[in-house]
Picture 1 (cartoon, one colour):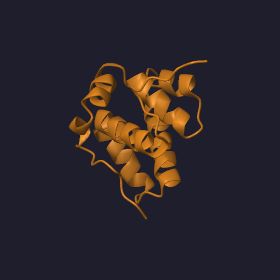
Picture 2 (tube, helix red, strand yellow):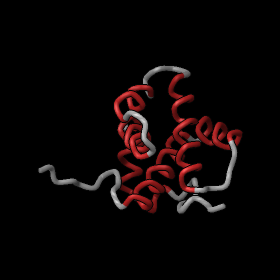
Picture 3 (cartoon, helix red, strand yellow):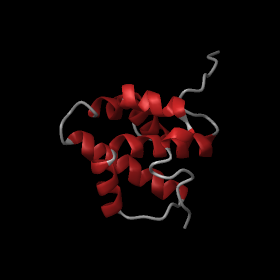
Picture 4 (cartoon, helix red, strand yellow):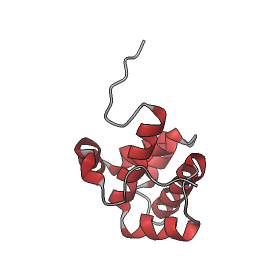
Length: 111
């Protein structure tokens, strides 16, 4: 089993992602969800719905962890997303950016 490429409190290694997460967490959560095959818009909007937000954060983190073969369990996912939501979003965003080559904050040309 692997580990997260960035520690939970290593969010300042990517200041751009850290700032986007602080000001627009719904965008980062939506992009993280999209990277694991969930709907970007619905997951992003779920941030504004009490209790649904914690559920979608927990589910997306679990999917990222499973797809990347990262060590951990559901209890840890729940604790991290509940206690350190912004740091968890940055950690997940950095993981998906590093694994796919496309990341939050990178531009993509539309054809």
